[in-house]
View 1 (cartoon, helix red, strand yellow):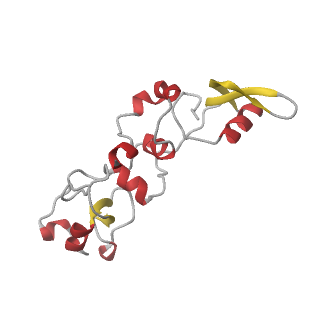
View 2: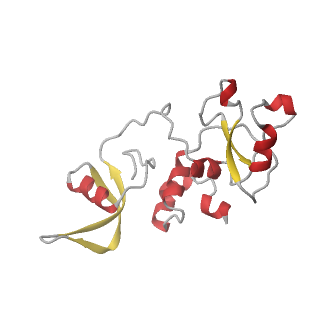
View 3: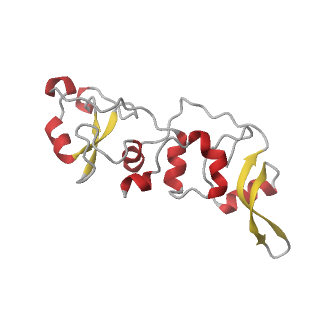
Length: 172
């Protein structure tokens, strides 16, 4: 689903896309060659839709943190030692016991040994460093998580946002 400005918003179900088009809230930008049939009529099969009116998406509202999204954001690697094998865990850079929050800027992917070594201490106390500063992931990451294989028809709308590697490819 695209905003009126053609900015990608999310991936929605076929049913949701059709309802938005049927109610006049969206238009079909790309359709599949097969028809979508109901008992009384035949419609275009929406593959990419665009909202008719622009929806302001607040940038301050961040998506909920999930382990899958966190691991994908960090490339399925420990941010401390860089290993990709083994058991990955969620680590708070500033531990919750020391006032750290569960925000995208304070959680990172860590392998179990690094997380155990760090415990509830600060990075400075252990002389540990982050490979990169944690931040909220780009919205396209959530599109990758919803649909690991991006259909060819979507690429032209996602091209400016595809600098983030697909999580499925990073996990393999």
